[in-house]
Image (cartoon, rainbow, N blue to C red; front, side, top):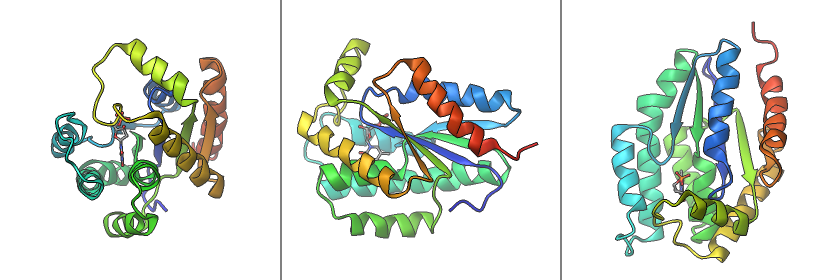
Length: 213
Ligand code: TMP
């Protein structure tokens, strides 16, 4: 639920599925409609959140427990909501975030094995029922995603060092969550051409912006 005047859109998926490229596309599309847009990411999005991101992604932090990881995700999220997301939505701006709470269910829940009930308690505490208006799930085989990540040539972070089975769990969790609430989620076949993905995105954005002046 989002009771604010602005709308909140989130992008989810496994690594290398094309979230960043398409975030820019969504931003351009909405801006062309005269909507004021704020783009951001999780973990991160604020000075404090980005510092927490550094802790979470640091490959030296091999001793981090799943629970610590989850709590840090929600600590960063709390700051993000209060400092950036909610003020923007209150001002009527639309916010697009590269990942949000669905990632905690997929990564810390399905892949790391924390019970969904635990995650949902934190979600209620931090978000008080607040949720995105629309979530795009970029779905891609893990092999293809990994190929794309390698081709970027950047150093891998603590999550990217996980095994294929970890990411298979993440992928399935996203698909399951999306199939349970088809109104909020759009599953995108990220293996098709960029034009194909963007046509699918546009169809959802048309629905979301229907009725706007
Ligand atoms: P990114 O690679 O999309 O920038 O995200 C950084 C990593 O953080 C990514 O591997 C997914 C992970 N993540 C979680 O595990 N839980 C979360 O709640 C969020 C927001 C991200």
